[in-house]
Structures are given as C-alpha cells and as structure tokens.
Amino acid sequence: MKLAVVGAGWAGLSAALTAWRLGHQVHVFESAPTLGGRARAVHAPTLDATIDNGQHILLGAYTATLALMRELGLDVNTLFHRLPLTVHSADGTLRLRAGRALPAPLHIAAALLAARGLRWPEKLAALRAVAALRGQGWRTPPGCTVQRWLERAQQPPRLCNLLWGPLCIATLNTPVEHACAQLFAHVLRDSLGAPDRSASDMLIPRCDLTALWPARVARLAAEAGASGDPGHASPTLEIRHPYTVRRLRHVSACGLALDDLPDRYDAVVVCANTPSTARLLATLPDCPGSTQFLADLDAFEHAPIATLTFQLAAPMHLPQPMLLLHEHRTRNHFGQWLFQGQDQEKRLLHVVVSDADALLAQERNAAVAGVVEQLREQLAMPMPEVSRHALIVEKRATFLARPGLRRPGNRTPWRGVWVAGDWTDTGYPAVLEGAVRSGRDAVLALTAAHETAVPRQEM
Ligand SMILES: Cc1cc2nc3c(=O)[nH]c(=O)nc-3n(C[C@H](O)[C@H](O)[C@H](O)COP(=O)(O)OP(=O)(O)OC[C@H]3O[C@@H](n4cnc5c(N)ncnc54)[C@H](O)[C@@H]3O)c2cc1C
Image 1 (cartoon, helix red, strand yellow):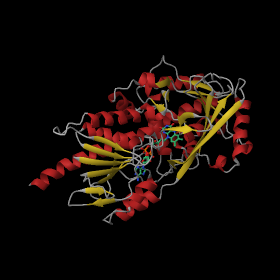
Image 2 (cartoon, rainbow, N blue to C red):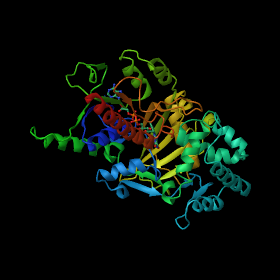
Image 3 (spheres, helix red, strand yellow):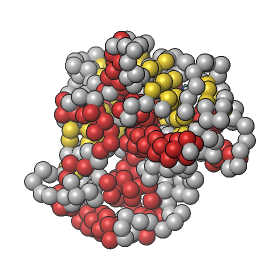
Image 4 (cartoon, rainbow, N blue to C red):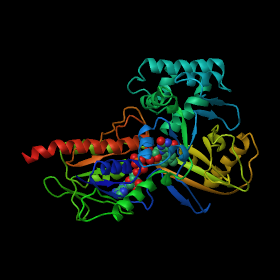
C-alpha cells in the first residue's frame, strides 16, 4: 500500500513507523520545521538553549510508547530518569513514595499509609476510593465528573486539594469540576491498579523530546532514502517538512492525493489536532456521516499549558527531579509542578502551569514575579538569583477532557481517509501514550480494511 501521513507528532510518527514495518510505502508531511508536534524541542532565544515546548512525564504504563522506542533500538533505561510513583511537595509538607519491596497494588497502599503530610482519615479515605473504583471494574457513572466522584467517595477536602486535584490537573489538564471521571479512572487503572508495579513508575526524559525518538525516525527515513535501490521495491519512509497540507482530493475510484502533488495514495492518515484535521477534511466533498463527523471535531475545546523556565545564576540541585508546588492563584503563585532541567550544569528549573488561563490573564512580568516568589517561599532550600527566563505557552495543549465528549475512532466517513491523534477515542485523556496507540491502531485498521477490500475488487 502507499500511504500519506499528515502530521509528525507522536501519533503521526507512530502511524508512519507501523506502516513502514508492515511494508507500506510511506510519505509523512509535517508543517513544522521540528518533529514531535506538541512534544518537541524548541530553541528558547532568551536562554540561548534548546528546551522542550513543555515538560512531559511518561508513565511505566505507556507500554506502546516504550515498545516503539525499544523497536527503534533505543535504550529506555538511559533515556529516562525512572522514579517510583513519588509526590513530594517543594516545601516538604507532603511526601509520598511507592516502595520497591512490595508487589502491586500493595506498593500503592503502603505508600499512602506511610505518606507524610496526610492525616490518617485522609489516607484511609484515599485507599477506600481506589479500592471501590477497582471493585467497580474502574467504571464511573456516565457523565460523572472527577469532582462528583470525589464527593461520592467522600474524599476529605484537604486530600482533594493536596493530592487528587493536582493529579487530575496533571493528567487531564482539566479542573476536577469539569474533568471526566471515567478518563481519570482509566489512568488510575493502568498505573496504580496495574498488576505490574513498574506501571506506576514516572519516567522523566533525560534528553529533549525530539531527540527522545522522533529524531531517530528522521534518521531512519534518511537511511532508507540513502540506501534506496531503484530496482528493489523496499518500503519507503519519506518525511517532508516543513510542508503544510492544505487539501485532500479523491483522484480515482480508490486513490487520494494531497494538494496538487503528483503522488497517489491508497490511504491518508490525518494525525493533526482537531481544528487542523477538521480544516483538511472539510476540503473533501460531503458524504454520508461527514457533517456529524465535522460537528464532533468542532465540539472539542482546548486548554493551555504554560511552562516557565528559569535560568539561575548558580547551580541548584533539587532533592527530587519533580516537586509538587502549592498553587495560590490570588497571589500569582501559579506553579503546580517544578522540574529540574536536563542541563548538565543544573541551572535550569521548569515550572509547569496546566489549565493556564489564569496565568495568561495576568500581565507577564507580574505573573513571572509571582512564580519566582512562590518558589522562594515554598522551596525548602535557598534558590539562587534568576538571571533569565523563558515562558512557553501551548494555547491548545490538550483538549478539555469533559464527560460525554464524543471522540471519533480512526475511521472517517470519507473513503480512504483515517485519523489518529490523542483526541481520538483512545480511552485516555490527551497524553502521549494515547497518541502513539492511535497512530499504530489507525494503520493496523486501515491495512486490515485494505486487505479485505482488495480481493473483493479483484473478483
Ligand atoms: C506543554 C504540554 C505538556 C504536556 N505534558 C504531557 C505529559 O506530561 N505527559 C503526556 O503523556 N502528555 C503530555 N502532553 C500531551 C502530549 O504532548 C500530546 O498528547 C501529544 O503530543 C499529542 O500528539 P499528537 O501526535 O496526537 O498531536 P500533535 O503533537 O499535535 O501532532 C500533530 C502534528 O500535525 C502537524 N500538522 C497539523 N496540521 C498539519 C497540516 N495541515 N500539514 C502538515 N502537518 C500538520 C502539526 O504541526 C503537529 O506536528 C502535554 C502537552 C503539552 C502541550
């Protein structure tokens, strides 16, 4: 088969790799100069450094992503800093860490019981909530928000503020009052509730996100191109970027083309975010189901994530690579998580602000000053002077994970056109693992559909 993949984020690259391994001819088109989409390296001119567009963490439960990286010959043990599930606050008032001694899920129960900064009724309430969720097969009532679930599970308000709220914002980028409890339950099921203890591990990249594996795919494509023997029909993997696809066309009974380009494809997988996907699909003629499909894409709302990177005048070693910050928006203390940077000199700190509209509504200098003040107040150690900073805002970082959101599968109503991305019906919120799985699954599904269709056409 000959396949076009639009978008080289983690979904698009996962689709491209899956297709290439299946022996298809693959052309990838990407608008941006850098591969990786919403998880990519950027140059920050104010710091004169390459940093990520936003700090990302992966979980041990990200099995498809880790398998893909291993298949690429990458050593995931060296590429990530792997921590057992750890929630330590910067001020030292909360300390929760899963041990390595007990099997799952006892390691989580033990971590909660031993946690410092939680009161006994809070620890027991948290345990009861997770046990009840497990007993219900990790199902929550239809339409239930995380807030409603917390109320039904009688979680004390202090526990919600200290633990559940920050975990919900970190995983769904949606505040508890709007967040879908079922998606949150899926994340808990596959991390805390998994039979394998390592599923709840937290993986913090040691290199930038483009270098992590997208750059390896680019190298593979370059090698595939360089070794291309015109007489030998080896599978093609070509990545064309920067190139923005503006139009899809049906060109024959079973062929598709992009813009005015000469290539003909058996299938196109659009792996862009929902607004770009909708724009591209709308260039195709209407067909049964197409109006509803576009309306579903239009119903997605998005939330920003801001990342403030501080360059310090002297090195600073955090006690943990990742620390929880207590957020007080009225004081411009917007920071939620603090990360040690990947730089060897330990002069970079990254502060993550999910659901960042409140920060963006502030005058920039006031917001930055507020977060610096927050760090000085909450860090249980002195912080050197901040010499420079960079603020990176991803306005459409993730879709708002509200209950009842209709998320399409990989198939579209248009012949030969498929979609993938973190927003498709992955069962997860907008996360890397969902993106990788959706790209893989789209290609497996379209290949199966093609294989059943071809014999019929040949009859
Ligand atoms: C700041 C931030 C922090 C995050 N933190 C985490 C985290 O800690 N853990 C986690 O699991 N997830 C996290 N996420 C979510 C994660 O980054 C996304 O779920 C994932 O990157 C989405 O991948 P994707 O391939 O579905 O989409 P995208 O990454 O958006 O890829 C789509 C690609 O398509 C390209 N494109 C669009 N239109 C066209 C066109 N017409 N022609 C050609 N190319 C086109 C775009 O340029 C883009 O590269 C975070 C996201 C952000 C922004």
